[in-house]
Length: 373
View 1: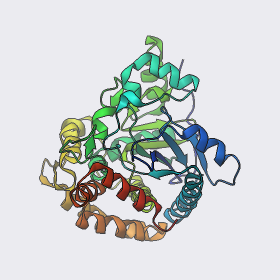
View 2 (view 1 turned 90 degrees about the vertical axis):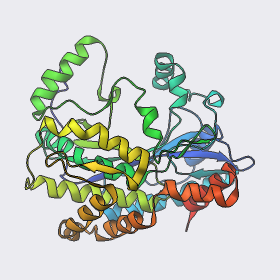
View 3 (view 1 turned 135 degrees about the vertical axis):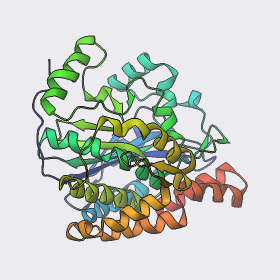
View 4 (view 1 turned 45 degrees about the horizontal axis):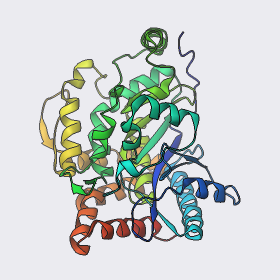
């Protein structure tokens, strides 16, 4: 079978998903509180949507479909405020960050949902180790061919999003020396990494996917853990490389930047994507994960090496004229400031030094998420 048609949506529309940590305020470890929190949220108005994730110490929030950065920001702030007040009732904390710095995967409980139980049975301990927290951004596409064009054209910019969102320096109580260690856990899954180089939706659906389905390895697009994947049922592409930032303001800014990049790329002023663009993809991805903004990246077409921070700042400045009609100039300004002042990973390391403990680091993350809630 094939995937069938790509259900088109409004070009450049946005949707954001954030996986969030549920934290005990007594010891700052993760808390298996999602069943209680989800029940409580059913009793009160809630913009967007909130759903369980694979273990009971995490939830996922989703915005409604938005057309602009400001719409994403406004709804994420509303959701945050609702979450914080509900969590206060249960005496738990909520925060971002790509990993919890000292939780033990052996302590996690898989949420009682058929798909999660199937994943746990299939992947064993990897399912509990998938208690990691990412931001996913959907961008609407007017056709399946546009979706695949954007997916591959964005490969050059993937390191930008990794470095700007990086917030997972600690794992299992130790400093990994990575800025985004979370993505190392994603790489453990067999269908992770990059999508195959296919630019036609018919070739992707009736060729690649149909063959993969015939092998019995996959049943739907949910079985692929690619850095960027098409979502034909929504009419979007989904960027999946970002750690969950410590603030919803950073999350909204990243969505705004992605929208602007897509508007620019759809004008097709850059050279079209080629399979050879992926020759440097894993190297650039590693540099962003390991060194964050201080990494070095190789341009996939010119093979010029430059600092990731310089590459990001040059891109943010070049995108100004595309951001203005979309109302996304504040998003680019936010990220330009972040590229100078440092990522959330740097903030967390600073908090660990100031407090002298990983518990103090978690407390700082909780406060940053609350902000004006």
